[in-house]
Length: 142
Image: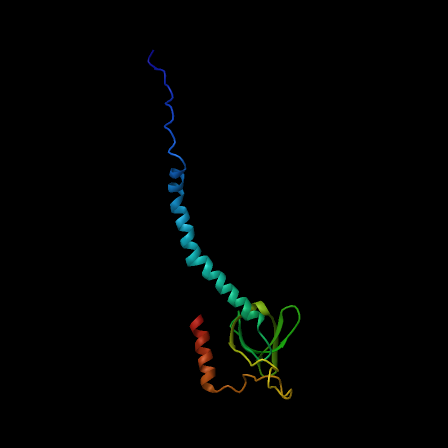
C-alpha cells in the first residue's frame, strides 16, 4: 500500500589496497613524529641516567631525589649508597634516588699510579666558586 519495497544497492567495486593506505597514512605519520620527538629522546635520556647511576663511586658529589646534596662515602651491596650530607652525618639511600652527579672523582689506580695514597681525589677541597657553580647548576634544573 503506502510502503514501497526497498532494495539493497549493490556495493561499489573496491578501489583496492591503496585506499586503505591513504586512510592510515595520517596515523602512521603521527606515530613517526611522536617517536622522533618524544619516545626516542626519552629513551636516550633514560640510558644516560642509567649509565650515570652505574658509574657512581666513592667520593662523588651527588644530589638525591629529595634535593639533598652530599658526598658518597660508601657504595654498598644491592644498590645502596652511603652519603655524607654534613660532617659526621651519613645517610643510606638507594642508587636509583640519585638525580644528578655534581662532581666526579678520578678513578683509583690506573697507569702511572704508585699504589700509595687514597686511590683518588675527593671533592672536599673545592673552592667556593666551584661550590656556587654546583648550586647554580642544581637550581637551574628545578
